[in-house]
View 1 (cartoon, rainbow, N blue to C red):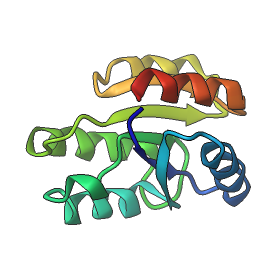
View 2: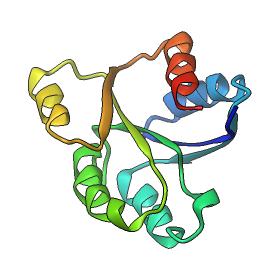
View 3: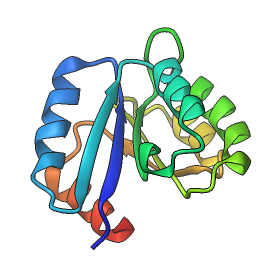
View 4: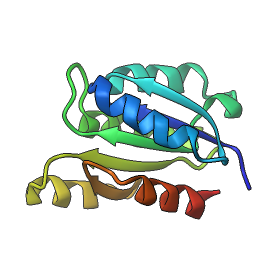
Length: 132
């Protein structure tokens, strides 16, 4: 079983905390990094693009955040992907069930899936088992 680096990009501290608790209970998760907006996460990825162990294997990305939202993050992240020597799965996570958000997410090939909050711990475990 692989050791996974997981990024949680969400401005909701309570959601970050609950997701971290779930992720810590999964043996394949090696590290968890949290970011309050897309700009912070993008800055980390850009600064560490040569250090594969510092890059995430999976990103749980919220849509609605200050500074840089999930879609703005994806616009820039897609441009970075060709320069990264690592496959990174991105799961867009939102409390929004707006069909327009879901349709917009489906148009971005780099998004693995659109997940609606609150996430169940079983769903998170299933996703990570597929990756590891």
